[in-house]
Image 1 (tube, rainbow, N blue to C red):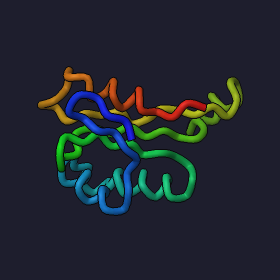
Image 2 (image 1 turned 30 degrees about the vertical axis):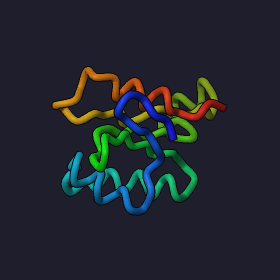
Image 3 (image 1 turned 180 degrees about the vertical axis):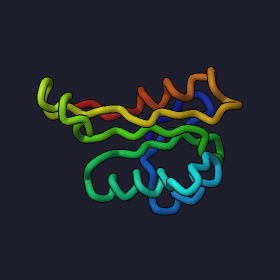
Image 4 (image 1 turned 120 degrees about the vertical axis):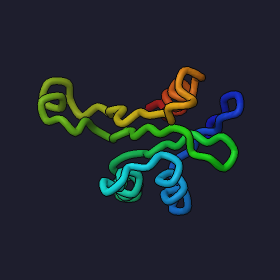
Length: 105
């Protein structure tokens, strides 16, 4: 868990999927569920930023790039993907907090 100002960043858990979808809807795509399933399978870490009980941002850290050309040229490096912050809170450091919470190798 990483804490910045009034934002706490932590990996998504089973209970957080529905909350994330309610706060940051992805509609029929169900991206929060898909990213949580990838995390459960060990393919990624789906980080959520929280202000109180509200999910206000997300970042998916893939264990390796999803782009074959990147892996071919650079190797199997992790990739930050799907960074987002709810619109009314953009510009307040939430995206930065998510990036800073990414685990270092």
